[in-house]
Length: 501
Image 1 (cartoon, one colour):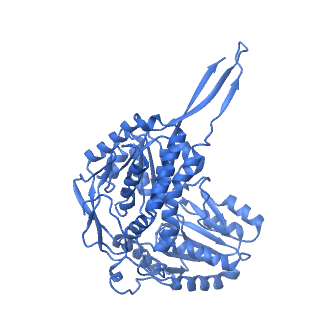
Image 2 (cartoon, rainbow, N blue to C red):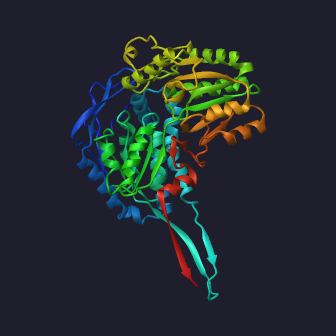
Image 3 (tube, rainbow, N blue to C red):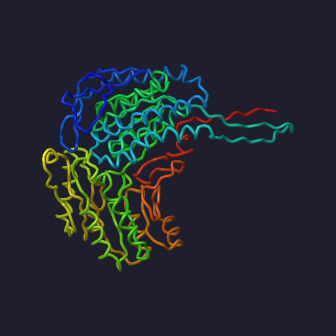
């Protein structure tokens, strides 16, 4: 199949392997220095062949984006851009089943999860920022002058320019549109580099952009890897005016180095080693349900997920037993089956990494409460990248498993006695992305949330997101904030105009 936008009408991988293309200047372009295979994580089958962009293809995409800034897109009002973004959202929802099937094939996550979160949120991001751009305000100041006539200062916003959007593989459409929508709302143009593991939905979105009336060059997609490939070529390109990235901290550091050449701004949402704090006065049922999701959702491949669980000692045994029961009820298998509740990891390479931490936990003296290996599944899922949901107790705070991000369906449960002590444990991490706090004591909830060093603290919930609120991490979990006006701050340049009266 030569189409750059494969249509998935069902769950089965096509017998004729699809070929993806880059999307540059409004056209699907197959050029690349080579092609690589994109495989379905649940079975290992090849979904499509993907071109790897060379530096010339990246240059073409950036030049197209730069030209588009001076074309019809640059002359549109906020109202016109807002209307187009709504058409993009409508286009995604009109092809909901195609996007859903492509996302499940790329990621392996259960269809029930992707249909509830990934695709609806991917569309919703365009509607949210279509609203936001119409209400974005700036400051005005009157000032005194020696002659008594005064002066007026007011700020105006303009687009930053060409934005490089480097995307992760765990929530491909959702996190890509989370960046693209505000960038476009503010009048920028974008060059998107999706993860090599999940290239399909970003490519499909090119067709939706054309149908919605987005001018050529405004939205571009290039495929490839990081170092000495599309990611490095894009982030080091001198005509890129800003870079936004979600992914692991080590890659974020490389992007910061690239951005320092030319002093380009960056927005980075990076790794996490998030803690849940469970107090004895919590609603046990809600805490078990919430922590189960926080640890095991998307097979633990969520930057906001929980890998450290601190439980007040008086309820430690009961909580551990109930979380064990919840983990053992999870059902791995065919992600298109409605009864499947646990998908695979993204790849065999990532499974090897997660299993290496399972081995480290055992070597470091952990008590394995449940899991720790590979589930037995019938073909074709026996060749997929599945691991067992795993719970440990007894690991030392300075162990590798407690310090390093694993990004798998696992956690260590630790008892605690004092509030101050558990806050100190939660903060004893190089990361600072998120936490969840479980208590029915409102005063304690506010007190603890204010002291945990993270970008977002949930109380009696997890993954509950108002898209207007600031989102990001502290310490090695990132730089900058996204969401609502905070996204708009990154994607615009402020100018002050001073008028002498």
